Each structure stands twice: as structure tokens, then as C-alpha cells.
Image (cartoon, rainbow, N blue to C red):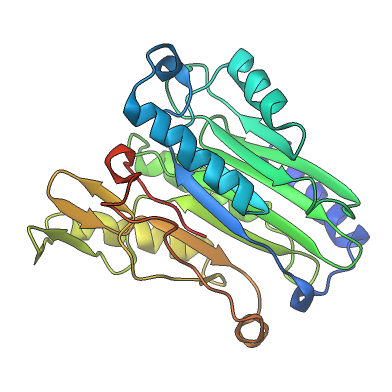
Length: 277
């Protein structure tokens, strides 16, 4: 699907016309993880770190209805092998870039969860970085977008990509949209260095948060209080899940968000990012 304004308008009209949506009936388990090279060249040099990454991805896939794996670093052959491996239990949608060792997103959907799904298709916003999947059930419609906000993007690129996503978000009365993944900014600019608050990138985080808010101001974050990023000596909270359900309905649904595993457990030494669920 093209992300142009005209194509986005046609897409939203089609979705709005066909959907029968009762957002209070939504029930799902969702997880995202920046794997930092689950596949790619790492496959040719197996190591304890890579083995633990595979264990972590298996754990997520078998424990959630929808799993988004970011920076998976794969080419078409590896995508096909991964899809065949999980074909018995999952349907996989892919978005890969030209460089197999750069980016790569897969959204894996549990077949049991899709047992009464009427329609399912993907929207590739940015190859290897942003992928969406629309699910249409008899009474519920869900649009899940997994995002890796690349640190190498310019402000203009981020503006363009965020605008492309916002143009494809259906009206909340017709479908519920979930935006999740490694957004690479903290709304409250949380970053600790040696147990002290580090404000050296506060302005950068604020600018990204303000840009995000400009496009997705009607979304509510299902927040958690755990760090999801660690490099060197500092911790930060860069992974988020946003949803555009009305606040009163969201309170009735009583959603929860948490980190599946924390730094320091048996998987910790292989993780660059941890997961939201």
C-alpha cells in the first residue's frame, strides 16, 4: 500500500465502510522486541549470545498472540526459512531492507488467535523499519503497527514516516490501532547514568516526543516503569505501546504492560533491548 495521501484516504474509506467494530471486545497478548540481529550474518557464526536470542524469540512467539521482532536482519531466504519453521503455529508478515544486516521487521500472528479472522493484510510503511498488520474479526478490528524509529533518520524523515502512519490510522469507531516497538525516545526523558539522572539528551528526547505527540495526540500509552534499553552505564525507557481506544473503555479493559524479562536474568547478557507485552 502506498503511503501517499490519496491512497491513504482510499484505504481508510474502505476500512471504515466494511468494519463492524466493538472495541470493548478486544483481547490479545502483544509483545515487541528489538532483537539486534536475530538472523542475518549472526546465523553463520553461532554463539551463546545468539543462542539466547533464539531462546528469547521462541519464548515470545509461543507466549503471545501477536509478536513483533525488530532489527531481525534477514534476507528473503532467511525470511522464508523462518516462516517455514513457524508455519505450523504462526502466520508471518515481513518488511526487509536492501541491506540484510540492517533493519528488518516481522510480525508473527498466532494461528489459534486468527481462527475466526475474516481478513488479514499488511501495510509496509518503511522497508525494514515500520510494518503494520490489519486484522478484521466479526466484531473487532485491530491495526497493529510495529515501529523501529531508526537513530539514523533525519528530522525530516521522521516527520514523513510518522505522517505516513497517521494517515493510515482508521477512525477509532471502526478499528483500534496499536502503535508499538522501539521508538527511541522517552516521554519523560528518563535516562540514568551510574544511578544519577542524565539530562545530556533531554532536548533530543523532548523534540521526538513533541513530534510524536503532534501526530498521535489521541493515543494513550499503556505504560510500564521498567527500563527497556541498556548500553554501557545508562538505562532508559525507549520502548512503548500506544492505543487509540477511548479512555473510559480502556479503563474497563484494564490493560497491562510489562517487561517480559529484565537485565540480569539468564537472557540478560544477550539483550540490547527488552520487550513490551
